[in-house]
Image 1 (cartoon, rainbow, N blue to C red):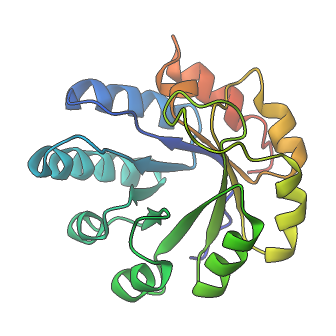
Image 2 (cartoon, one colour):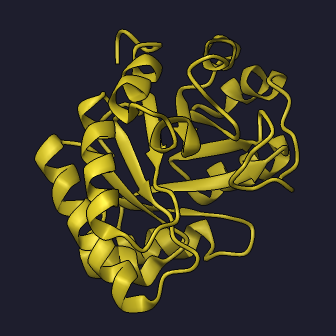
Length: 207
């Protein structure tokens, strides 16, 4: 990884409508997202591969990093820039071994600074804390206090905030020290995804 990670980190919603997903993603990237994560828990293998391939192509066109959630095999198959792993997914070390040194490997750390320390020791490029606000995507997720972002500065890697982030509540999360805002519904569920993305990306004027 040879570029700083800072700004809007858009995460795709669950959908089988690939054309609509592509249109929405185009708007979000045009709004200024610096990273995109493909997240699909329900799609069958063929649909996931198709969606990942078209999104990867779109991200390359925009110069945006493309990350696959959970699925190392899919990340390898489509040549993704990296993978994001959670508690029950492939370990950071395995992801690094399979995807190589240049890949971006991120880890969900929920509300745990110690888990973040372990992820960084294992080679994670960024750590994600959340939910910082109640989340419609993961309503049962533990709440992560904003104080975690200042505490995690010691780790020396970008800190990602996730969970219920919208243009009207994101400024406080940025002020707390989040380097990236991971957002699903706050952009893809907005009436104007491009405008919502621009508002969130604009919180990082130097990105």
